[in-house]
Length: 250
Image 1 (cartoon, rainbow, N blue to C red):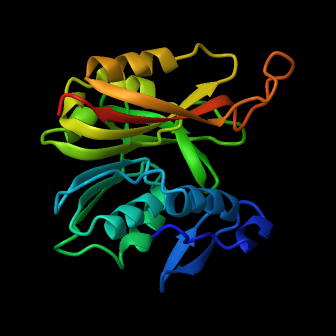
Image 2: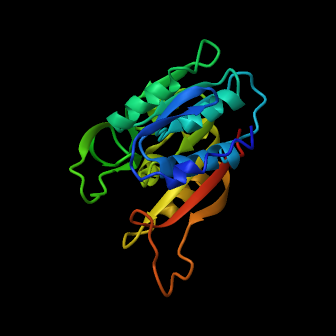
């Protein structure tokens, strides 16, 4: 599957302009071509979500599914997998449903949930970003926000999970700290986000993983080149780290 590179024209298109393209012979809708390009490259070219699996029907959770690229990767890479995909933004969720309507069958069942993972259940403020990944209650500019349904991770961990992907734009710390059943997961990918001028929580995330029996590897995705001299930011974040973890107790 490696080698499915995103079309360069996505980088030249205006930001936050909705559209569609043909992806492996089927239509795929998006809200921001720039974001789609980099997500596509990370998922299908770099294959950051590829994990070793010998099972015929691995259980996978895609938390922060956005448009569904990661779920499509799982369905093609692991035939017979059972995927639960969560996306809280109603508009993005509608695109997710359209993009996955051509995929999934009895051998590849996909459960779609319009909900966010959080540290507690109930409605929460959610800020959208015009086709890019939104986040829970961070008070982004030029957005009135909306209320979304939140569930906790343990609602999904009633059985063993082979792979858990979490791209929650800052909610990952509270989600992991609220879980009592993280040991149900074998492989875990967390995109950790640190926001400028806010307390760091990376140590708390790693403590959760260690306590649940995981070993982990860290790969910076975004960081200032010279942080002592200038704090560069990306959407309010001054550090993004990909965490690859494996449960050594399973």
